Length: 540
Ligand code: PEP
Ligand code: MG
Image (cartoon, rainbow, N blue to C red):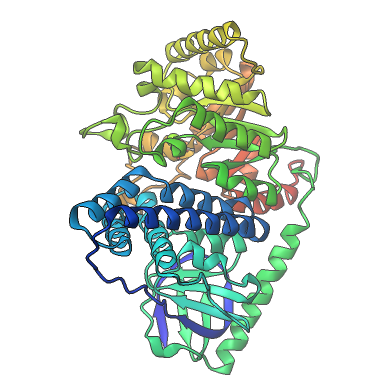
């Protein structure tokens, strides 16, 4: 039997299939008289749940690192969330019902709200977390212990969906792969699979009776094969060996320079969306962070993240990188990245609309809060600031004036900060055409090939219908990149690429011949790009 799903982590796994059936807490609605005592029971259960989550945090920290552990911190915040607490208390008070019922209903309601946030996959994936948290409190209230999944031999784990607290309790050395019926590429199971570097599939509609049978997970093609014959198992074993060999060879590049055979070296940095990605950056031996998409700090928040909240995130990343360079890009919100609290409304052409630096220069308070947070964090590492969607020299002059004002405010308050390099994203044709003048104003350029391709070719990067003609290798895009690099150097600025094209190893030679100084790619691509650079000889 062959079942198709979607791969969220590549690789091949061969082993016994183990279907995990969740024991759901059965929650009965019971009438109670003493609502005060019930509210007290609820409070005590929350305290116990927090203790459990602290324990899970410590366990995860040891086993899967900061990234895997962070979510138990966020679960603790959910337990303490006022909407959640008040929602359940109101049900207890108004309907005179037991805490188990009130908690389960509040959890269901909140999870449904999150699940319905269309277009926001991150928030949709959080619905599973809320259910997980409310189940935990219900279990405590019911006096059930916190037993997890038990595996005694290596297995391919199949489940409807896996809650983070379930996955963390697994003996990781025995899990060969995760396959779920539900899930999303942003679900924690998918993140965990990528962190553990094991294949993982989502949206596979498997029948329960596959439990105990042999199976193969093909994380390249997104397939689950049940009861494969010997010949198929053999051919997949060969594929596994090939992959392992490739990985081993790439691992050997850790600690090595990103330099061509004839001695031309470039900086190889990683792109990240937040604190949780730092472990991957270090694990893959990136030289620093070339693009921190700071808007994720905003997207993950229900309201404007405060200066303190932002400061904490930037400082944690800077400290995590221990002195290596971290380029923080200021808020690049709008178009495909929306948050409710900004009230941006609908626009005819959002990609050409009110977004990124345009918002920051219009709503200067938002901009200044972020700049203050970044400058304060600069004291704890090596931070550079980069500005997105630039189209003119005038914008850069305005930005520099605002930055100087923020520095003055910090000086007056005796708040320490370090000198920071400043740079711009070159991702509009206007910035390319003005690159000679722009280079006089900044320390560096980073070419955003995702948007540069969109605006140069006039092809909406979100439109699936245009996928076949959306060609980032188009000569117009490559010419724009070449022109930007030349003009950067003329003006004394260095120039990198942080768009997806930077990781395209078929172009590595082209970029190096153009004189690129830096490539910033997703952490998992670092070693393969280093490999491509080290195989080049530009003297030939
Ligand atoms: C780009 O446009 O290439 C880029 C790196 O930024 P984003 O993908 O976040 O727009
Ligand atoms: Mg962009």
